[in-house]
Length: 411
Image 1 (tube, rainbow, N blue to C red):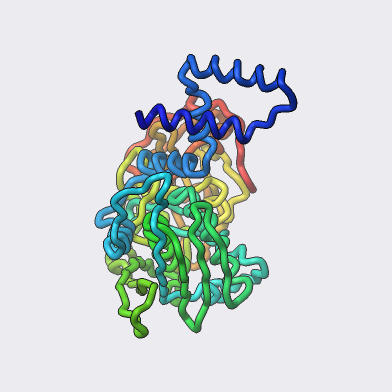
Image 2 (image 1 turned 120 degrees about the vertical axis):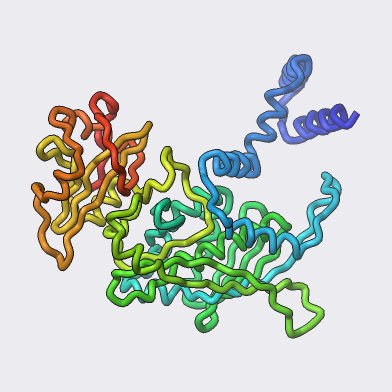
């Protein structure tokens, strides 16, 4: 009976919102409606669902579960569970009774303006936050994306909207307000070295916002390494704070961010470890632990990164073939293509210390054992359509004939 009642409500709604200009139009509409009723009205019901922002958000989250891999322990899940446990779960939500809204305060030991200043970026529109390159994962298995790209990948529904809030706070230097697509209302304020977010929304919205803020505060911070040679991890922590003025409508959370250095023994010998040669692409990198990244066809393979970004960091003008090898060569570094697994290309980075120029005939390149004497030119056209991972691999395979697409390479 519930299904029949819902169907009748849809038909009544259609009659109210679809105007008619005359008796003939009304007759034609009723006849068309009856034909659809005989077929179950599937198309009408489908459009009511698929045309909503909530549906597109759901599809995005299903893709996240399919294509992203979660590290252990999952900091993102821990943050979400702690926030969710502080809110009483509503037993039933109906069309007559909407989900209950709750109020929260998120206090972060993080000033996004300081991050922009430390990066020495002249940023008047707040775009430096969106364009900042972030690294998420671990030393052996990581992903490099711009801040805006990672938010859209991991929280496709509200990630870009939350980023606009942070950009507004950085740009205005004081406060910023916004409403998210699912109805949550947010206000951001920078107070000293802290970012304060006040939010009113339903339980899932508060959980998701907490996950996003924990990642943002961890990734958009400068490394304490002065010379740039050390690699630091950052892991967010969340702690509930007792409000000083009871009774308060807000549940108050504080976010702390623990920075700890990779052991020097591992960092100094990174070229000898699987997946760690990518350290040479960055200066003062900070890697956020406990958040999901895109799955790779090989475990512990290194850093997934866009081809154009890898070339920019290596200061390489573009891909080239030298002595049968496909390379991205900068002044003191070179990326050598060494393996292909499915649609993913694996590169190995070789770098010189003290900014010494790199030679195409460096003996370390020869020792890689990759030599595609006739395959190199056939590989170039498809580079822009593939995924790219910078990391060590011990075996190489021929790549000829694998790619047919034109090259899409941003200089």
